[in-house]
Length: 493
Image 1 (spheres, rainbow, N blue to C red):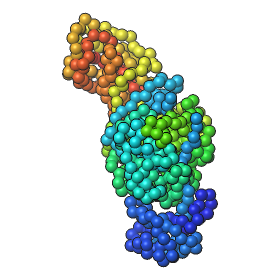
Image 2 (cartoon, helix red, strand yellow):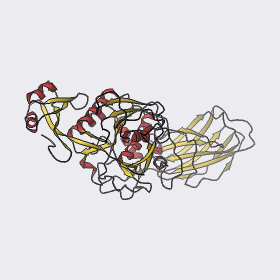
Image 3 (cartoon, rainbow, N blue to C red):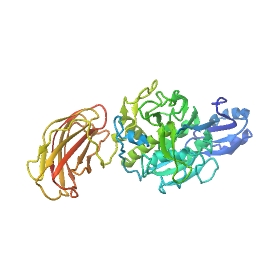
Image 4 (cartoon, rainbow, N blue to C red):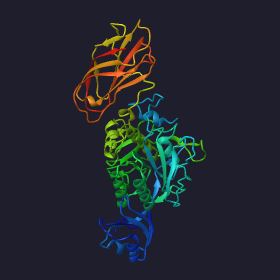
């Protein structure tokens, strides 16, 4: 018998998990002790939630077909209502101050499951991309939101204005009621449903939590093992997240909250069970009050969907990635040392989507490191810059060439020849920036490609660009731990 009594315990309500290989049915087991089955689980933990006396629960826990019985508990949203969205602006840049922009990639091939209070499906932020999964509060197929928390979370994951992954598909799985409260048994049912019905690649957002619970942890763990990436809230108790479920689960991506000054939010939990931090204070997103409503909220509930959205962006570019690979990409790509007062035992890592984003920058920002001297092109359609540029760890550098007196447009088969000395070429992301500011991705960073040095020629369709002007090669060292030098590059138009 586990988790009997204590804060949040629901009288005469229990979760029964059967042993592997047991042939007993839920109804048979419950009937032995005069209990009643509420919900059966078969895709994560195998068992059921039901109603019975404490004495009956203890008897059932001793049954040879039962692995354990756990008292059901109340779970609440991990948010605080408060009174433009800076969060998106923060997650795509290395350091403050904010630059007023957010660069993102496509995610239309990914589905995000919002396990929460439901979603206002008709909100303009979702553009028809949101649908109901199932409602485990009313036990029907309409997962509409009567509380607001889930709609806000969904807006941060995938809203057109406020979302990290702006074209991701959204599915509401309602496990919390109009007061933002629910039970472990309802949440396990939601996780079980997602596991059974997920369209992959998939990410699930759980901006909720409660005291430690084995059954809930096991359900989420098995759902992750089935190939679904989970982002979960670290909790709002200003305490160690290792005392919360599902926050303590190592297989999930557990998220703490920061404010706009990169300081851990006063309410945010901390500790070794966190994986990283994300913006979670005064986050503007969609509201359930109307189809155009907005509101600001704070909490690790608001930080978590930033990470879920980032996971969706990563999965869009790497649809075969496992949940562990997604977690590692986000954690390893996070900004080290940025969080002030991160808390005892916390990993000092802040979400950074640009570390893995496979998009061409539409509005490249001016590099923070010095650029190399401009070298005039030696011939009309060919330009070379051979001046060495040091590439510091996780820095962005640029090198320029000028093309002049070369009328007309560039070729559909233009080439960029690059020579870089680097201890891990997989760290490198290369972009060619045209004179009009258009960006062309030459190479994305690749985790695991740990071969030294890069000597390559890239063919690019530049037929939409005029030849004349200043062309820029931008090199970014995405992952921590390695450095190098841009030796030279040649542009042939």
